[in-house]
Image (cartoon, rainbow, N blue to C red; front, side, top):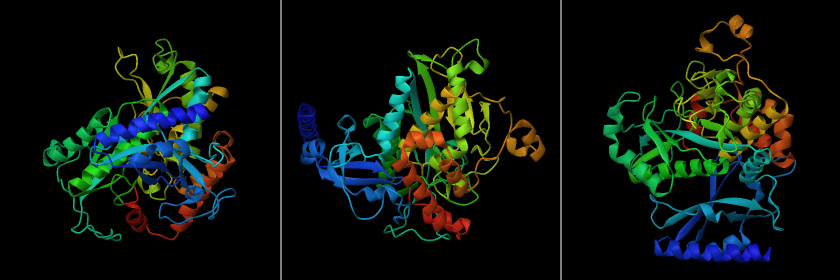
Length: 465
């Protein structure tokens, strides 16, 4: 332990010296709570070595914060007692291109004895990644991040209610080049900031809803992918502020319009070889990949409580909106909750799967960890995939969907939380403390908005993510 601490201290001192030379004065240490809010403690850059050696104090009560900053309780967490230590991941320390003088690092949480905090979501994601590695499997994951940008009101007043006017800075059509022309400086600055920070951008383009854009980043290790999506969101937010704009990653910005998703892409590999590229197998899926995706498909009703954690999420999850509201999969089918992407035939890394239901209210560490856990359970239980769905299941009659075995995924947070509560594989993977804290937050979110109209839910959550 002493040797490790000395190594951390030395590495942190070298990092602090480098940051100082770059003009960095403060470091933001972030974690994401169970409501999907990125929380932060900041330190002067010269305190990085002390933080790496001893951690930064923070209360465990944040595990039962809701999206509106209310505090609930679970069997194991809640109240003013106790303390945890935030330890920055020194490998991810990043100077922030859109926030001069600032750097960022994701943090892991430990107790005061140096033991992993059982509700640390980032360590949960790491445990599941290591569990897959112990089985000889490698996961490569990446996110598509959607957001809506509006002009910030003069003086940046507090956001209003359901009737708050949204001033969109671009008026072009969905996916139209007009939007790129109108906001070319803004999109260039987003792309440049991400690139400077080491984020590999695959695509950035207008999306369907007014003022909506999407950025897709390269896949990688699941923990790194979750780190990346946190950094992407806060970079987009920072660039937006510098352009006099506001960015919303909320699932439903305006009721009735297409909401913001945060689709999760997953590829499975063994010994560096894609398991989505078996030429003699159905759909190109090796047996392990079929079982993994079968496990994910089976677990989707429970996974919605992880990937769609807000009542606002269910305003977005509407049939025939490319959100994937039915429990089915399909080959290149954007209405299927689980979409198999075949990629180019000559690209050995081209095949993977996309979960279309998830949104940016989700804690990305919980999302990647829970998907891995569900997939590994699928392999252990020899799960299978039913026949793929073609076309939009939303246009089928009730009897035809029943004949094909296609059911609606949970339409409310309560229903999804009920499924998570009953999911033995996810309960085992997450552990009692984390599982209980997530459920407590979901129950509190649903209760808070139980009497609210849809417009009020969207307005209350519009600027929370």
